[in-house]
Length: 346
Image (cartoon, rainbow, N blue to C red; front, side, top):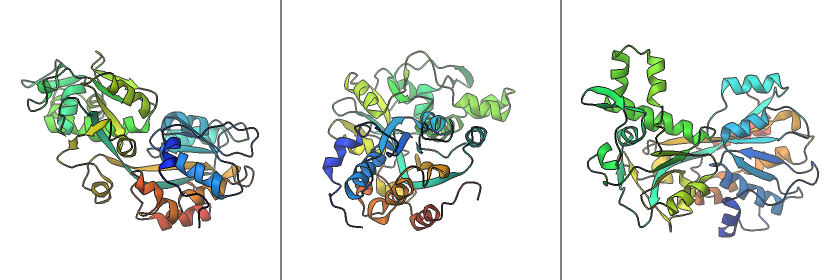
């Protein structure tokens, strides 16, 4: 594949927002979903429009859950063709899709991304975090003197004496974002276990399932703020609060290093290299989902999917890697699955 237009820094203008324009007719592919996948999908959409005879796809954000809800609304030109997701589709979502007539779904894994913890460039030095720090800062109930209590911690130093003694102001993805689920499972739940709070909950009579759910409950007193928009909203909150710490996708952070500084997690610096090696603990696969019923109906849909996962774009030396995507070592298998239109039911 030889691009007519080089996908370079100019594409970053697209990466932070949805592709401009709206569909005049349904000859344009419509995509919605994960704000983490948004930069990659936007770059691909722009390059697809530049380098093929198909119109530039319309890409919108809104979060993984919101995108999949739109995706599962039904089949037809009044429904979207592709849902971006920073997590795997859930069984209940597959069931909802099927009930609405979306029965053949093609899952496409595009690569891997890390969740990073970043603060204002000129703010306090949040140089290192552990899952325990975040649980002690944000958990609804934490362990104090061997007892589970409503979270009394008001500063990061209360959560960990080695952190700055500034007010806790955390800006985390809202519940409709796939990033939130990964944050809950790999940070809050891990911190809950590491601090002994999980054991205390179970020892206190909670079932393991209820204890795990309680571990991921976030305090509601204003120290933690859910961000329902995309990462640009999180960045704006941090710009306005020098003590603020946000949860971002690696690619967004790497595109805003002039404004943000990143912390290590469990002693590991987040980078494409540390994620590719499996060293960085808070990483996850990224996906998009296609309605097979729309292939052959919406012009260019299959071609878009193949273009997205091509070696030239999604490979380790491609432009997506330059913007933080960790190339999937099994990319060739994904390419074959897309070519053969393999669905989740196959």
